[in-house]
Image (cartoon, rainbow, N blue to C red):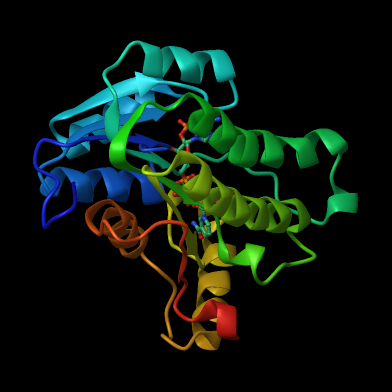
Length: 238
Ligand SMILES: NC(=O)c1ccc[n+]([C@@H]2O[C@H](COP(=O)([O-])OP(=O)(O)OC[C@H]3O[C@@H](n4cnc5c(N)ncnc54)[C@H](OP(=O)(O)O)[C@@H]3O)[C@@H](O)[C@H]2O)c1
């Protein structure tokens, strides 16, 4: 495995119906991969599938370990598995209920664990996790998300040792313009993006394509494993 292209390689992206996952699915397709996108809501999968063209779609909730196991049991092993799925409750811990705090862990951390536990990946294939810069630069306004991201960075490194010769890596994005931010109204979103851009060495916030490029690099470069790569416009420095 490795090389310039993903011709005929089987790729599944959990969280592939939106944002970073959708961009990753699109880029893998352009590299010749056979792509499956998996997430919870059939309608979102169908509209992502209509944009992408020739992809398989699968309704899977990563918080349900039985559903994740069935997904892999029903299919041939994959070359590359990507987990970009997350349903997050963001805020200071003590402004949240414990149920909200758990939701972030359940979907982003345990979801990744469920996939890592059940995934059938060919030797030399890859597993890629998506964490986030809050793991290295925590925020008191996103306490649980900071903790989850740091946990995912460590999980990827431990899994790289445990699952070798499968290669396991983690991309740690900075602020990226995806539909996730639609929970803010348009003015607040624009103001936040402008404020962030002004602090970053690159002077702008990220596009999901930039994160997808790194995920596909993990698939293609067969000397990378156990790496956590920051794709954050320099946010970890400022
Ligand atoms: N955007 C940023 O600024 C940013 C920054 C740092 C890190 N990240 C991380 O990057 C990852 C992707 O974020 P994004 O911005 O691309 O988010 P997004 O656009 O909201 O996409 C999230 C995807 O996950 C799916 N999903 C959510 N819960 C799921 C579950 N329980 N089971 C299966 N699929 C589920 C969603 O589809 P359904 O809702 O239909 O299931 C959707 O396809 C997340 O881990 C996020 O924390 C993002």
